[in-house]
Image (cartoon, rainbow, N blue to C red):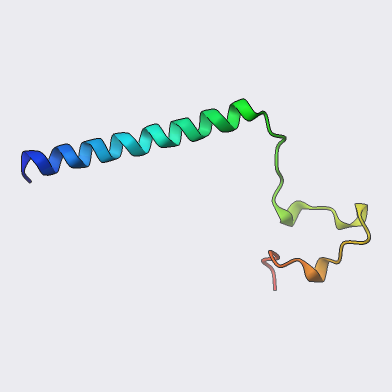
Length: 60
């Protein structure tokens, strides 16, 4: 591996880590409410929602 290949690999990894850290910090600063997966959604609280029409349902 040449020096340039190594530097390209290192800087690419560093950029990925910085992007991930930036995204996590922005998400934390947004103070969004905790999101539950759709599998945990209680459809009895909103009877107008039809469970069969859930396109994200995993247990088919």
